[in-house]
Amino acid sequence: MKCERSLLVLRSPIAVPHRRALLVFVAAAALATGSGSAAGAGDPVQGAQAFRNCVACHSIEPGQNMTGPSLAGALGRKAGSLATFHRYSDALKRSSVVWDEQSLDAWIANPAAFIPGNDMAFSGLPDPRARSNLVAFLKAASEGNGKALAFQAGMNLGGGLPDLKQANADVRVKTVRYCDDTYTVTTAGGRTRKFWEFNLRFKTDSSTHGPSKNEPVFVGQGMQRDRAQIVFSSPSEMAALIKSECP
Image 1 (cartoon, rainbow, N blue to C red):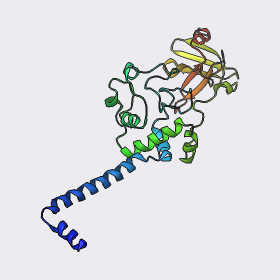
Image 2 (image 1 turned 135 degrees about the horizontal axis):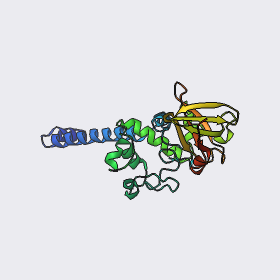
Image 3 (image 1 turned 90 degrees about the vertical axis):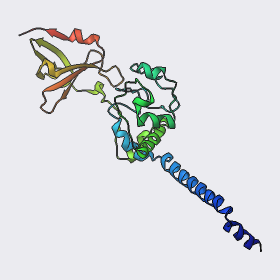
Image 4 (image 1 turned 30 degrees about the vertical axis):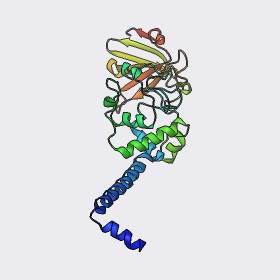
């Protein structure tokens, strides 16, 4: 009789709307739970693959800043607060954002919308799954596991920039002469190259991987080998090395 009464209740006109509401609620809850776990459980190995979009500007090595700041230890850090990075926009420094999984996801989705006025030259990553994977990788990198995950993903992040202190004599610059529109570069190994002034760049690298003091390094560039850069350990060395003289 108890079973029959239950069936009667479910079949009654009054019970039907409640039953339908209950079914809708259960279905919605199941969908919400499913979608939440799908978006939240990012794969850090796939995230390492997604990090290919970031390596031109960011390192996961502590203290190794590039165009953008090092992302080592980013989670839990206030936006715009890494003491060794001096190129933050005012908008980022003024924000009250602290990086966690939610704020990183919003930032990666659309940096310009999340913190208006910032200098991030990246339009955003619209795919929620790709963002979830990337955030999972950045979280792992903050915990010191980034290189191992990158290796699993078939990526060799290496140590970032090359160690210019190990440069051989053929690329260590001894003299630079400037005449009209031409730079003539001579190395410690006796090699001499001439460059149109627009094709030779002068840069500095003050990091531990930069050149030794007063030993700038020549780095070739360009498909036609017609471009190059000379990397100094500090700006003051440039004026001392470059001499304006014509043969």
